[in-house]
Length: 368
Image (tube, rainbow, N blue to C red; front, side, top):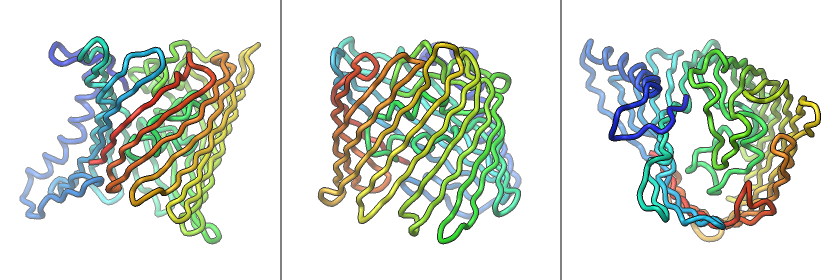
């Protein structure tokens, strides 16, 4: 859910109320439970894992990201890019309620000075999980689309680069509203994760049609499903050092002109702090006269000294929907003094400055 241009001070728009409702649902019930009787177990806080309140069966966590950008043809810009709060309530062993409330671009400083005109308050995720069996979990609500690997771990402190590959954002909307079945099974010497979902965003998402793309401005196309079905298989092996995944989605999207099918594959391998990863996608576009979308990226992470890493990435995306072909190379450094904190510097250069302008970017992300 997106509550556009939520400004403080001033009157809150009507669509801020879903955010307040999500907060009340996450906090109100455990507070009522705690009021029913004393609990002497003390709260516990761990950086990167949040504050656990045993008396409420509640965990508060989140992340924040500060960013500075110097892009070709634009003013240098500093912004509080993300401030996200996670609320996790487990009222019973088999039930979990989760909400992610995120503020985007809450404060920006550029050539015009300080402003917050682009700030947004977003319910990024809000769902309930039920552990039906040790191998099967059921989810209902708004969740990240299980397509590819990057979309599921895209929070700034968890990724190695400041920027996100274009082919992980455009082919398939990054969120869904509906039901999801997921779990894992032992297979050979590894573990097979599975997920399958049905989406009804057109009916279930109260702000359907307003979701924006991360990092790129593409007003001509939508980042919302109308209806969708899909799933993902992911195999972990070599003692969790390696994983490969395949994804599929069949969907109609807002302003999408027909039914689409997308196929994805991804992989990751870690060895002695080295890491190589990549994703590929192919999307069949049904609209007459529109060529299909396809693209891929490959990324290498190299340990340099202590917690300092070098990062390089090549990406390419050919889009019939955008009518654009985009290639980009990125080089950067990533410093992880402690696992929940990541400081990154990146320079990127490509062949399509209109969609992805060249330049440098710096970010500091913290899981709290």
